[in-house]
Every structure is written in structure tokens, then in C-alpha cells.
Length: 449
Image (cartoon, rainbow, N blue to C red; front, side, top):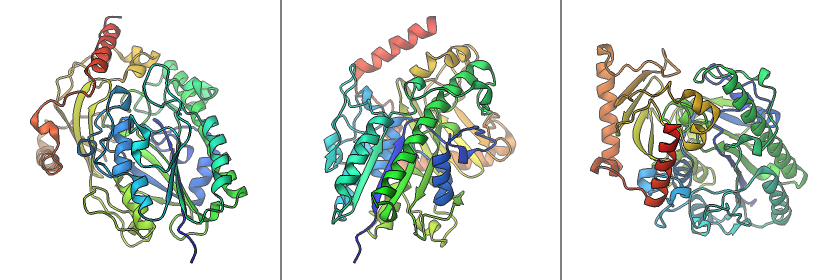
């Protein structure tokens, strides 16, 4: 009997759906990503795949546990003192119970102590000079580690799960690659179309091109070492792009992410199929377990989308939920999205339409927008996604949408109650008051510039 397939997962920072094959009117990206495009043309691609949270650690914690951030306890960034509590069971723990060896190469952003995540092996940890966390892993570093790993494990008797994490394409973009020609950049409609944004997008696209080159090299390694046929390769990212009205918001550019899966000669993960079914990154873990024939735990929130791949169902969800509690400041919000509508509830009075994370606020694009978004934010937001895919027209006070608003409002409240959201009891405290106070000082200084 042949062994179960190996699983290789590659996850980037802040990439959203910025890949050539995801080019749409909402994200017209003019990107040069031939390796990822080829992977999608051979495998399967998901167009409505959403994260639970538009920030790094909370989203990644949901991938690891198939629980919402407020359920697993990872409601803020690891570099702000948050960490995935030990009582959580993670992907490597589940897979080890099912005969897999489990390994991490490169970045993780879920735990202050990477060994707590349950991997059998961890690549060498590199620590940020100013932070007590492992943080600095680029594509070049993981390429070398991947080659050594594949050579070492090519004849293993047991299947392996390898999670590869890179810092790309987090700001600063020029750390990762050379910018493309700004004249070639098509600006997505959720951003202002001017030279400031074209230049930043040119830098961003250059970083994405570097990721694409690494993907091509890893696929070639799998082919040459004769591992590809029995390996499911997965490409994904944690949340949306690091631009205004995307990262750290519950608008689609903040929570819509990419997912491409490929395994040669498999009925499930090949053929260039594209699926528009509504999915959450909570569904990643149960799908892997279902795929390898393992029992899917009843206590997790995710749903296996294997029935969609098999053609047995068109959808496993009719709605997804998203949340944000802490990024660099306290900005709690919860949201529900269906195919047709989105409802967002903002729990704090904020004097700006949306909050820019500090690296974005300090960038030229953030400074350009500072005064333009200096307006009080609505307590509730409702969007008709069919008529208004860019989420510009808040319909919360439109009497024609009163019934829809009430229905989504109730569903969101019921979800919060069912999942025991601590926000229902009041303000959630930061994990590190010192880090939180430092961020508040930085924001006050920026505001006075």
C-alpha cells in the first residue's frame, strides 16, 4: 500500500489576490507571475476564499486551529505580545496523529515560542533585532532550506507535512525585489489612481515577482527529486494587501485571499478548475484531514470543501464571518459576508473612516490619505455586493434594505453568542500594555505631523 501524499504548504504575507491569474475588475493587477499562473492552470484555484481576520497572526491562528481568533485566543499580533494558547490543537498535531512527520521552514507568526506549535522540526530561527520573536525569513533563505529538506526526506517511509513561511510581501517592499515599471501598473479601484500609489504598487509587484520566482524553483525541486507526483502543493496567503482600505479592514481587499492547490495525476487537485464557492481559511484544516482519510473533529469551526472538489456539492457555506480586535491599536469590529451582502459592526468610536496600520500610515500613500479619511466612521455598515462590489455606498440607513440589515445583524449577534466572543462582555485588554502604549505614542506623533 502506497503512503499518503506529502503536503507542502507555502504561505506569504499580505498578498491577498495579487497574482496574475486572479486578475479581476476588483483587483486588476497587471502582474507577472508565470509560475503561480502555471500552477493554477494545472491545479485548482479558489476565487472566494476569505480569511477570518485581516491581520497576520489572527488569520494564521485560524488556519492552524480552524477556530476564530476570539475562540483560540490569538486576537492580536505576536509582535505585540499575543500568542496562540497551548490548549489549542494545530495542523501539525492533527497530522502527526495520522502518520505524518511535520516540519516548519521559515516564518511563523502564531506563537512566541515556535516549538509550542507541534512541529517535529523547525528550521533555524532568526530573530528580529528589536523583537523577541523569529521574524526575518525571505524567499532566498527558504529556497536553500527547502532543497536540503527535500533531499533528506525524499525516501521517507512516512508522509511529511512541510509548512513554508516567508516575510514577503510585507512592507518594506524593496527589501524583497526590484520594482516594476510604474507605467505598467494598473491601479485597483479601491485605491486612488495617482503616481504615489502607482509607485508603491510597482514596489509591491516587484516583491510579488520575487515570490513567484521562488515558487518556480520549489516546484522544480519537487520534480527533480521525484517528489512532485505524491505531493499536494498549496499556495496561500494570510490576508489582503498592505494598502489602505485593505489590510486591517473587513472590506473584501482586506479579507479575500488566494488559494491554489496542485497534485499531478490526482482527480481532485488538477485540471485548471476554478471554484467560486464561498470558503473561509477555517476550512483549510478540515479539508486536509478529509483528504488524507482522517476524522474531522466536531469541535472545530471549519468545513471540508472536499465535496466541492469531488463535484458532490456546489457549496459548503452560505456565509463567512470576519473579525478584527487588535492590530497595533484596539479597533474591534465583526462582520458577516454572503454572496450578495456584507454587514460590518464597528465597536469603537474612531475619528477616521478606517485605521491604517503604522507601516502603511507612515508610507507616502498613508500620508496622502491622512486628511482625506479624517471623518467619523459609521457604527454599522451594509453593502450590496452585486450592485456595489467596491463597498462604497453604505446602505445601513436605507429603508429598502432594512430587512436585510436586520437579518444580517441578528446572524452576526447569534454567531458572537454561539462562539462566546469576549467582545460581548466589553473591552478586550491588550496582551502587552507596554507595546500598546508605544503604538499609541507613534500614532499621536503621526497625527501631529
